[in-house]
Length: 400
Image (cartoon, rainbow, N blue to C red; front, side, top):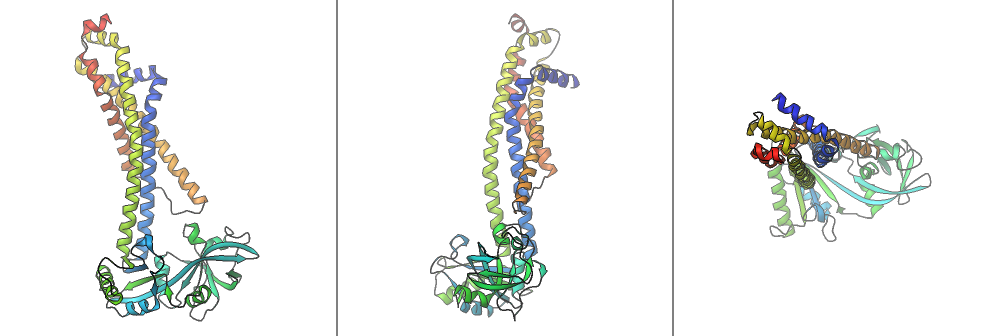
């Protein structure tokens, strides 16, 4: 076996430029796969962590039949819905919220951002946990607060406005001033980190929405199954709105269902991208096959000499298979290094632009699998040329 490897390696070194060009398709494909799978796995891990912090006892209710149609005209939730749901068995707390994009002003500088109206009772903690909102400085909103606000980290780190917003400063939303009483930790999304949070009653006055609700978050009592409670809410809301099954103008999802939905979306995106990257591997495999056929033609006399001195068909075939496998493995190794570098580069760019949730996870199994796969692709690509070389007759090969 050592002699096979040595002869294969000598052949690759003798044709350096051709070997590099042959491996190009392999390492482009492997680099793409390693980078994309690592990005997808990293994002999946972050999403799962967020849902774990959120807890499995939460239910989200939005207007519209699905998340894409939420907020469409004529499809709304109201305070009556909040009171209705609070009476349903298994429901512990209901947290309504309002949100809208508004003009924000600070120190004569204007920007646009979301204003979020939050309840100031204990139900606010449901929204805080669902959105992964954590206080960094100052305090949360309280029942007595009026025209007070909490702000996202882009306000306090100087990313949104030229001057940093501090506790006690006044920030304006649609010309209404709010005194900042708390600042939030960074979430990792620019829109979320640019939000301001005000009491729900203040949001109603600001947005002139006295009964409308944009979303509700429900916490289920201990001992109750969130999926069963969600189904009960759906049935009772259909009956209350005189709707048939399938005609709902509202959407109800548990934490687990949301996590599954995100998982499916990430999986589909990742599968499409990997499919595109796999085309590069196919091209690389065809390249190896072509170069090995050329190598067989170039080395016909050499093959004849080896057979004349006692080399068996199996020996010839092994030499060519190992050579093609080594080119595949070499391309795979380079591809893994490039894939890791690409992933880290994307992660660093995302962190600098505020998207800290875009993280890379490199699984050792993925690295080993990529290398093994590239070797197999190389070896299989060289199989037909190797068989052709092995079948050459010594007399014909020497006459070539």
